[in-house]
Image 1 (cartoon, rainbow, N blue to C red):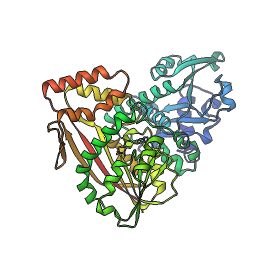
Image 2: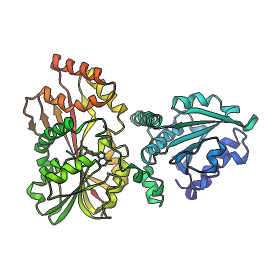
Image 3: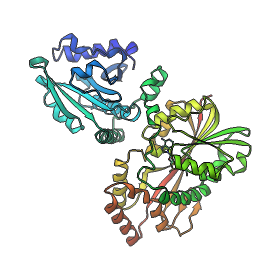
Image 4: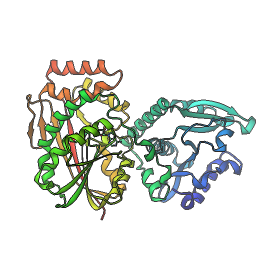
Length: 465
Ligand SMILES: C[S@@+](CC[C@H](N)C(=O)[O-])C[C@H]1O[C@@H](n2cnc3c(N)ncnc32)[C@H](O)[C@@H]1O
């Protein structure tokens, strides 16, 4: 929430806890950057019961020097002023909104550093608690009542680990009872003229998909996958309300363009202008030379470089699971799609995976450490709804390893041979350290003939007119 709309209530809440319970002086109640801070508040029966704030600093901000943090490139985010009414403690409300806020900041603001301060006279025990959340003790400043400890997270690996930890915590919380729905930070910033805080422009080169994979091993996997998916997709595509030509279609994360070409060969796309966006130069080069009839441009899902309201249809095939910030992509899609335009998404959903315990463990382990989000399809409708996308249709197709070498598409299921199913899962091996688990799961499945299966999901949205 903005300080303008909620500042008085937040101060009131802080005073009830910090002044009335802890006896803090007024200057500790306020923060010098409250006016431009980000404030996430929880309400019960129309009353604010918990809040947490985040403050974004530019690299040379004097406040950073005052807590002995050296200048680094990129923004620094301070988390603080977490507060909860005594009547609402014990329900993990402020913990949930805090975790959720950190996850969203990691996804969409991508700071180079987080820090927080602990007033050690009374709260030294919190240092251990924050350490469990991956904050590292940095320094202690001042003495007596004024003494503070500064804890921080910085460095690429530590920040990634911090993100994964908070993503896992939000997933656990959202699966439990009393989960609190948290609105999108990206939408809030974009709709309040504060898009400058979003990281989209810094993420042009980000690609979680290709980094560990070589094109040679991956290209044949993609071709096989594309052939199989097309058979499943034809009836789905036929039932979607695509506009009649002339119309413009933009495929984001188009890869080598092979799948896009196969889809748009269908009659209903005759007369369409077809465009593809791909961040990886060698995939883009291949797409351009294979399909000169289409227009391919280098760009990312977060920053396509397309004009506002320029396309009637956006397709995203096997893209969303590779994004760390689906909300930034949805914001960009909202911008480039014409009002009333169609968004057509196809992806796998690992949360639907079923198989023997060892295979389940392999998928869970991979997903926990993968910086993209392989269960995003589960909450994409909620996220997309915040950006004005209304879900028109949702189809699930079960992929099973109970078929023969040639995939057998049936109604809402595709049966694959055991070896073919495992070759589709081979991406798992790109993650360091997972190979023994992959081998164990594979051998178990080949030996026992057990079934593994998961959903492929299609979601069709219309952007508000
Ligand atoms: C699994 S491949 C799918 C390719 C193609 N859509 C298909 O279905 O065959 C994922 C694609 O998304 C691209 N990609 C990854 N991160 C991206 C991002 N941030 N913005 C746009 N594309 C991205 C990858 O380079 C890759 O081409």
